Image (cartoon, rainbow, N blue to C red; front, side, top):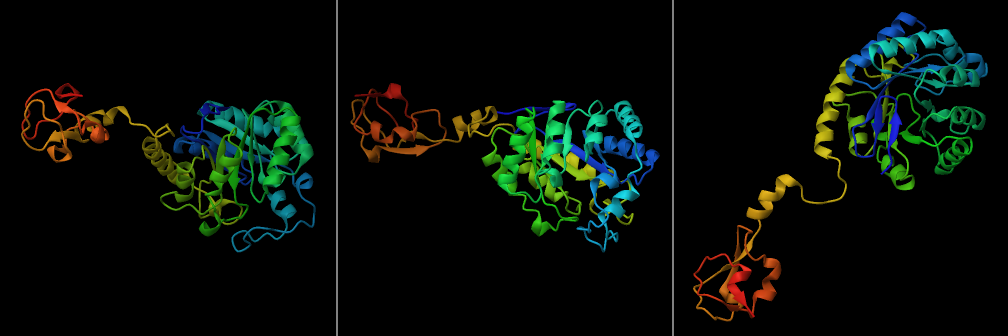
Length: 353
């Protein structure tokens, strides 16, 4: 079984999930709002509060077109959108990391250029890489060389691209890599979530922790992430906001503190139900049922000592404290060592060859 240390938690394939509140740039350039979002993420029960560290000029060309739902976010240029929220500098992220430490939640941020990797390296316990950079060889190498665990989203990727990213990361020094299923739609319609792809990642990459980055619009049951966890995703990430009614950016498909708290409670219930064992086996609380609810071979009519048992002499009834019906054929043809009465539960001490 693989295990991976992510900040404050050791994550295993059958354990409880590490939950990331993806603040991104929902702070809209306000350091105070960013700090408040960290506090809300902690209040809701997330393990990590994650930002996005970029500069528009190094992330997108002037002519980069929008690829999101423009009825929700009307900006038609990626560069224009990113420029709205790229005012944080290295010292601002350091201040946010210090605030997260004070609050008691892991500080995380996705780097989108080399400078961000360098100034985030001493601040984050692991690196999260966005789906869009799965083919960004130089950025992957830069992250891997830091030597920290890596969580890689796989939205819009082929398996060959995932294989290539893993090889690049490993060759550059990364030894612990988690993979997140993701659909690169903003928002992602439920019919497009394809959460079952999590099981495909598990089958292909059994030595990696598998998770899910959710872009669906949250419902009261937080269905997408709940199903993802039930399927085995143990790193769960979702956009996070203080106000889902705010226009544009990532507010419209984000969860808030109430969604998060409700989800964490739900996850506790699901985790209890799932348990930690994948191999089918009886558990301790079933011992009494194994003993009493199963059947034994029972005498169907009075038998004399020395009688050779035929099938008409026996039946099967509860409890399972005598000879199991598994031995039905073996019992037939044996002789009784004593006289027996109808409804006696048969034991091996009652028989002789």
